[in-house]
Structure formats: C-alpha cells, structure tokens
Length: 161
Image (cartoon, rainbow, N blue to C red; front, side):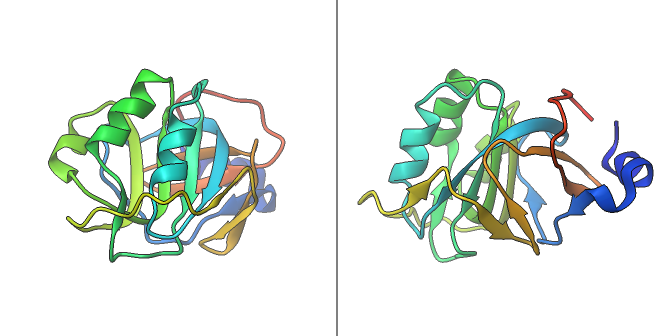
C-alpha cells in the first residue's frame, strides 16, 4: 500500500517524516521494521550492524545530518545485501552513488559527498532517533516510497507498499 493511501487510511496515527531525503538506491519503496544507529562521520558501527543478520529490516542512521563525510557507500551496501538488510535511511551523506543506484536496496540520505567517514567506532546502537520531526524507535515499522517516509507504530511487517 502506498504511503499516501496509508496516511489517508490511518490519519493522525501515521507519523510523517519531514526530512528532505533523496533516494540513491535501486529500490524506491519498502515497508519494514527498523534498527537504529547514531554516529557522527564514523562508519564503523554502521558496518558492524550491517554484518549482523538484517532479517529484512531497514537500518536508520542518525549521522547528525553531516554532509562533510559519507557514512555509507557501495562496499557497505554489498555487506548489507549479503546479510539480508532491506536498506538504509541516513540523516547524513552517502558516496558511490552510481553503484548504489544499480543495487536492489533502499538507500535514502540527505546528500552525497565523495569523502569517506572515519572508522574509530564512535556511536550508539539500539537507541531512539529524532529525524525529520519524528522519533524512530528500534522495532518501529517504516513505509517509504516516492511520496515520502512514514512510521506505522505497532503495525505488522507488510512487505512492499
């Protein structure tokens, strides 16, 4: 079901994310449970998380909106795909945009930059994140498509919108 239809059907029970995400992946629509990571210009914890079984989840990454250094690129995308992740939603930057666009993976980010982020392991996982005016909590269900991104609280996993 499309995000616009879900908003019409559920009204105020749907939380709409107002962050200006850009789609960089080859997959532009999904509905999935989420995991959450917070970091700043450091990709180590993101990589460590993507190395774990994704079970069809989306990884929401609060990179504090930084566009100075990318925290996700083609190598991490390959790791995520190999481990069953559906995609990533990043309040920050990506790189390797041409390669990302060819992958069957959701990749939403605020922007792109060729510079790679650090790797010292700074960050937190399994935490609630505030992005685009709404709170993302581990286990929430997110639906996204070309119309936008929404949170469906306490909703079962529903596959593609």
